[in-house]
Length: 192
Image (spheres, rainbow, N blue to C red):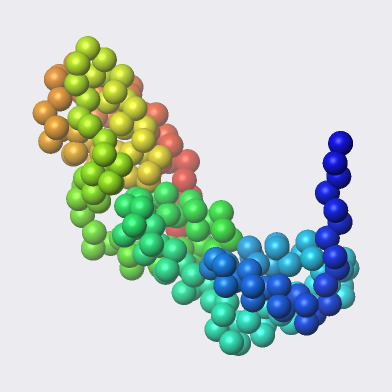
C-alpha cells in the first residue's frame, strides 16, 4: 500500500508563490485559496498569519477578488454552460462566496434573462431530443430531472415541455405528484 508523501511546509514567500501559481491555473474564491494554502503552511497561529498576509497582499494586488470571481463565474456558467440561476447559486455557495454577494451577482446576471429561452439554449447545447415513442413519459421525467439539475425553475421547464406538444399521457400535470418532487427540491435551496 502506497502512502501519500507529506507535503512540504512552506514559508510565507513560498506560500505566496504557491498561491499565485494556483490562481494562474484557475480563478478561486478567498475561501478556496485559503483551503489550498492550509495544506501547505505550518499548523497553528504562524501558518494562519502567513495565510492572512498572503491573502491580504493578493487582494491588494487585485489577484484575489471575490466579487469579480462571482461575476466571472456566473457569466461563464450562464453564457457557456447555459446553466440556470439555481445551479449557479449552489456552485457559488459551495465555493465559499458570501450569501449577499451571491444574491447581488445573480440578480445582476439573471434578472433580465428569459429563463425559457435559456432552457431552450441548454437543450440545444446538450442536443436533447423531445420525448417520443412508447416510453415518452419516462423520457419526459428524465428531461425534467436533467433541466432541474441544471438549475431551471419548474415554470420554465413546463413552458418548454408544453411547446414540444407532447402526448397528453407523457406530460406530467403541473402542480401534480410528478412536479411536487421538483418543487420540493427548489424549496430546499436557500433563498438570499
